Amino acid sequence: MVHSEPIEIRMLGLEDGAAVARLAQLDTADAPPSPLLGAIVEGRLVAAHSVATGESVADPFRHTAHIRSLLMERARQVGGGRRGGLLSRLRGGLGGEIAIRRERTSEALR
Image (cartoon, rainbow, N blue to C red; front, side):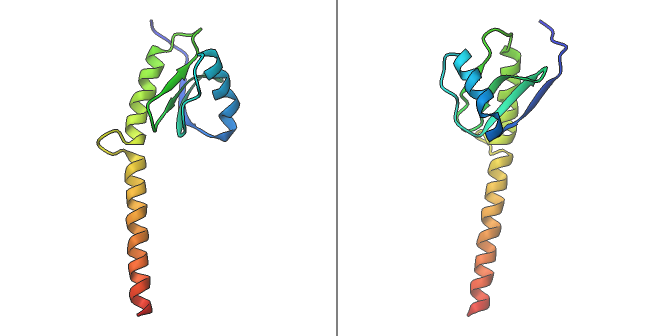
């Protein structure tokens, strides 16, 4: 089935909590843990995917298999997977930078 509606994929925040809860209730499942990617079609959240665990919920009254696939692919890109994605690289980069700064500060105090 070909869908012509635009699909917005974005990270979900606290302001999306009610929409995620509604979606989980429709899907008769628990809401997946954060961080979450969401797919919005026509202004309505139709699927949510946990970047951390890979769990997802979706509107059972819509065709969402292709949307879930898109969310899984995007989660691999931003969340890590086995290769280490954007979030992992950023966390690692920040941690390394913090460690370097601490070493420099320690050296300067000696």
